[in-house]
Length: 148
Image (cartoon, rainbow, N blue to C red):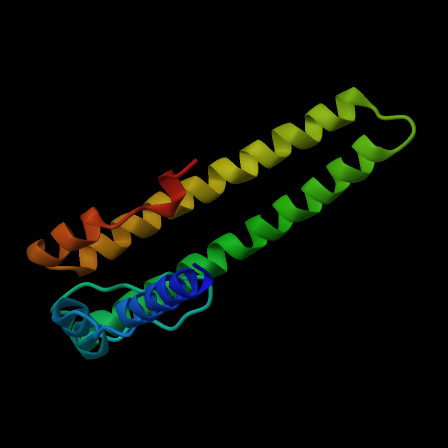
């Protein structure tokens, strides 16, 4: 009885091992080739842009737009982080001032609104660089600034 159980267990392990040893489907290999032909942008904090048919000139314009956008939003993000730290300090102190906490919350909201406006402007600048077909691909990409 034990030998049958061990044999069954051993054969199941072999079958499971064979499943994971299968070659990668051809579709995935083709996708990887496309990604290598259309290199992503390499700026920190900027998601890679996989739009087919980008020219080198468009790549340079898009990189410049990304740099301008980061220059505009980094100070705002820094201010948000500072105000959030102040809010945490205020809320965890022995005596907290609700009026001051509400003021900090309002300030954070105004800064986030300003960042959203900058994100929308950046999105429109990016679209203006692209051709009609490329805009379709760009518009199908998820917009991080629209996510909750």
